[in-house]
Length: 609
Image (cartoon, rainbow, N blue to C red):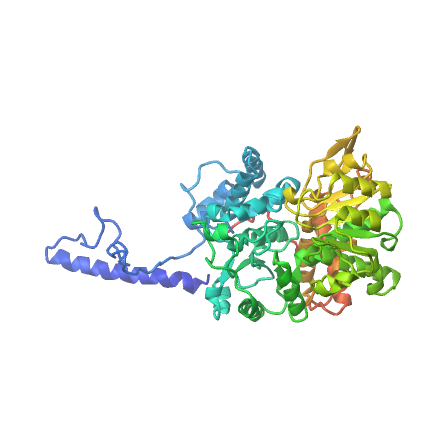
């Protein structure tokens, strides 16, 4: 806020005061009482704005003067430090008496809060506590998350965020991000301008139709963009003020929500077709007009039929990224590349079978084919023949091609029709089984044992989220393969023991990829996302898996090192952007890893004048 903006309302109040003072003097000369009849009982402040005298149906003006001092400072999450305000800061910012006497450190605050969060038994209670902290002390929230990332990531992200979205209407306290509904059609640019921050670098947008494996949660899907952007900051280093979560509310087909009196969204069935795409077109145009060419828009949890369409439409005109299609693909590819040290051979030597042929499954499959093609110099069409997909109707084969959705057609190979996953495993004999079905417990004992019969070290990736939707658990995979499986999942599982040996399940968590990828796009000033950038991100992540991790059966590095990992991913992505001529931030830094680390947001408290 400028000095003139601060002083203008103060000058107005002074003029009002002067006017009242002269009026009081005149009444004193005339022998009248100096108590203004408009004052409150006992001589309080005059009701200069008419709020106390207005009836409920009359309009009042919500006047406010925002100065980052005193009580206002304590209510400002961007600058509040709680008990960590120093003695000098308490004097210079009018905080005396507004805080207890003790002066704390940020480290002590972190310790106290972790004790408090650990005292809750229910994960959703921990989620609410973390969101409350974010709303009152932003830097402390990110400090807590960064310092305890392995413990708190499952709280602010999957699996707990799924339950939070389901109950978002009940736990909703104050809005986070922007809600753009069909009611705002024709006014979306104005809505974007209502957001207080002007320099936005990353937007995560959802329409709430396919939240994790939980289906249509409508407007309550806002928990996903909020959680994703918290990770962009904590794990990737993007400034919180440069992040904007958006829910595009076009209604919901979830009747339970429509009947819920606490539902916070548009109470109608989902808009489709032209009405839907016209709204999205206005949104994307307004974003570019308001924030420029280099703002990253991450599409999140759109249903298959819209996800592919939107990505295909805007990837050539905007800086867009779909985490469900591209982020999942990149993190899974990183795990596959890393696992080759345990499996042996190259990617081209292995056969892949997917259970689930939606946006995640086909996105992963396409990136694997692209990587094989890049490494072997064979056409992508040829590389696809190493990859098979099973959907709800069975193995995707050429005889089904006419009835398939367009994104499934490249995976329709010559083979007899097979109706079950078990039949497909026995016939295709894959070395890698990947689950993206969104249906829990579909990797049955028979399926996993069949994988173990074919392979000495079967690689099993049960990727569906949240934990309840995983195709099989880590314990099941290790038990049914007699400890020979290499296992990873989408949501976290605790370490397991089998025959006295300890196993640490891998987590193919998108949080490994999208924060670093997005940060790499930001620091290079990239204007488009290219598939080669996704390959660069995968290779950077795979390179961070060390021998000590392989010794424990891990194919992903520990999340405790995520800031370092993200810096390397960002550097690799930025290098590819410069190589492809898509970077606008010139000249190119000499050491991109050091440059990425130097640009990362750090949540340590700042000292105030």
